Image 1 (tube, rainbow, N blue to C red):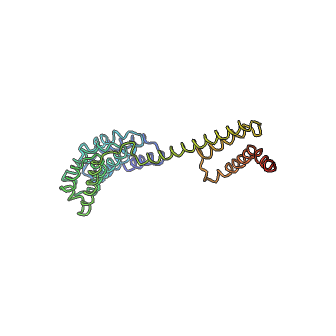
Image 2: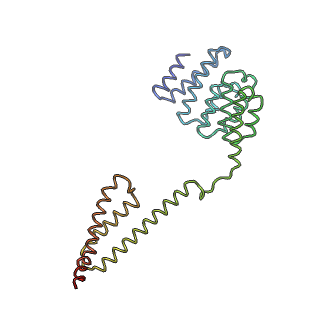
Image 3: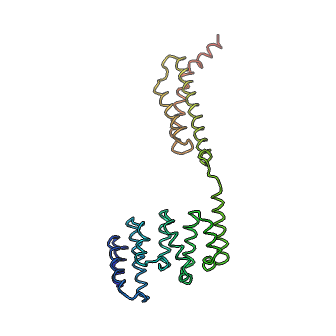
Length: 280
């Protein structure tokens, strides 16, 4: 029987053949059904097969059937070993289906035979933090903490900490949800949009200025290609790129050079005519 358990573990961990591992667990559990259930070794083997079977079902994305599969082996929730109950709570909590474990865990915790087993406190803690609190069942959580289950599962400090968690959850439930327009990121987004809008308006004003100067000079002293390229560089630098990045330095230098050339082309005639006018 131990060889069958080892084979199932090898199929699971080494070969990653989860279906074969699950089939081996089913065969092992069927063989154990005919053995003396009072034998401690039988209980350990059964728990081992169930633990591997739960992992195999999860890997096969058949987690919905985990609890029913475990109940097929133990018949009643209160007979499930603590380690397996802990695994089930964590599994269903991870997939966002904590409610599936609510009834089974409640029955397990209120069974007098389980209050003395190792792991009782861990099951109570997981049930509180991963089932009751996420589901918003704060009244039941409070009763669990101050009641018989909490007295047997937690120390006084742990009970106080658990009550603080429940109170915090109640306060969160009472707070009204934030409207989409008041989200923390809305101000940042609005600031980003307004900044880009201002940059675009400045860019449009600069292009309008260049266009007017082009009409004034009318001599074709500088090409439209340079204006277009300058506009593209301005857009890339101030709208799509961060001017503070080192990768932008080359483009800034190129843009500055082009603007100087365009400035000289536009205003050179005026600068040459000024001395002549003064001489007159």
